Amino acid sequence: MKKINLNDGTSIYCLKQNEAIVLDEHIKGYLSYDVNVKNGDTIIDVGANIGVFGLRLSKKFQNIKIHAFEPIPEIYKVLEKNAEISNNQNFKTYMMGVSNQNKELNFTYYPNSPALSTAQPEIWEKDQNNFISAVQGNISNAPKKFWWAKLIPKFLTPLIAKYLTSNSQQIKSSVITLSELIETEKIHIINLLKIDCEGEEINVLLGLKNEHWGMIQAIVMEVNDVENNIQKAKKLLAEKGFHHIRLEKEKGFEKTKLINIYAQKN
Image (cartoon, rainbow, N blue to C red; front, top):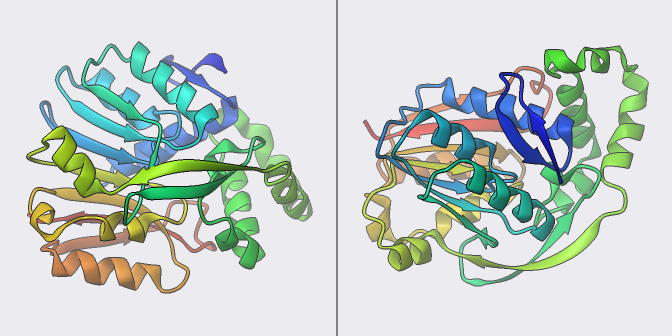
């Protein structure tokens, strides 16, 4: 773990400097699409990673409640530290994942690229071209600080992809449903549900009881469109009252199956 400064000078703890800066750009993308977060809101962050989202919101708003989930112990330690330096007493962290039922789940942790860690590594393994395209997207859309990344020849991308997923580790972690969190923490409203959990996003939605859908005002989620996941998500969200659903692909990721869904009720 090390402490670095993001592009605007904000201090943050991380495992990999380049990942932290890329994650920050990713978060800025989320917040630029009419995601109306305001003071006093309650945010649930599923797949919080090192906590960039929670840290940014805590610095921007004096009174905001955040529930952040990260199941990988090494990443969670960093999330916990960033929650601490946010000075937000309502920034709660949980070393567990979120899924469609309370259970134990196997996760694959990639030390060379912690942000790729997932409960469904087969998504990348079965579609190497999709993964290589995602790596190339990261390289081509690298922040200005990493200007040199754009000089990397494209023929090296498969080798970089192989390196990023090498030396993987298997980790077992508890996962709970969102409804379990809602009932345990006595949550009455969720102004924004953010989901970025590398393959479990549909299961996260399926873990909500019918009576709890009404308290969610907006959702932003990254979906890897395998096994028709985009249509599954859109259908479920529409059925639950989200009539404003928009799909966006981030710059540099046009050739991948990674798509952001922005859903609001009003």
